[in-house]
Length: 246
Image: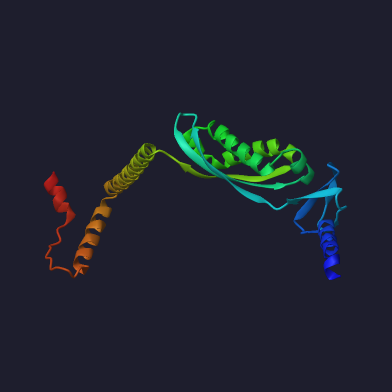
């Protein structure tokens, strides 16, 4: 008797399995009844009419999608490879299922073409220094394009910029030359300031005759205080040098 009712038990189990669905907090179910859109349900327990209703599950969490390296020619004709990452989520489950066949694949393709188009509008120096501006521009364009698909682009980041070897060597030489230039400028500025101080000191000594004597005595005191060597000196009045100079 148990074998007789076994097919009915299996059939009833399949009916129950297809009728009751449980969706997590971050999931939604797009319901189609006889092929027509019926509504969005979830989260929690979902009851479907067997044979009449069909559910497509959608994840509402933010998706991290890598954009593979793209060959790009900058505005100043420099060939480089640029890759990035796009953060997006489904904002409208019914549009993500009804409007576009595969919203993930469509978003990936439009991200690649937009990356090539936007980065190609900048020169190399702007690409390296204005990355935040490029990221904001990419996000704005992608968000406008994917909005009808029920997709919300939350952030776009340019991850890496690979330059040709020749360009890397040229930039390294330019950076080294710039460092040497700054070092020479700093050294010349130091020499200039030192010469100004010496000129000011000579002016003060020329205007105040007693300052020469005081400086002479200070030098004698410093020599006598040094214990490294034995030095003999004889104090000579400064007036003698003035007399000899005349």
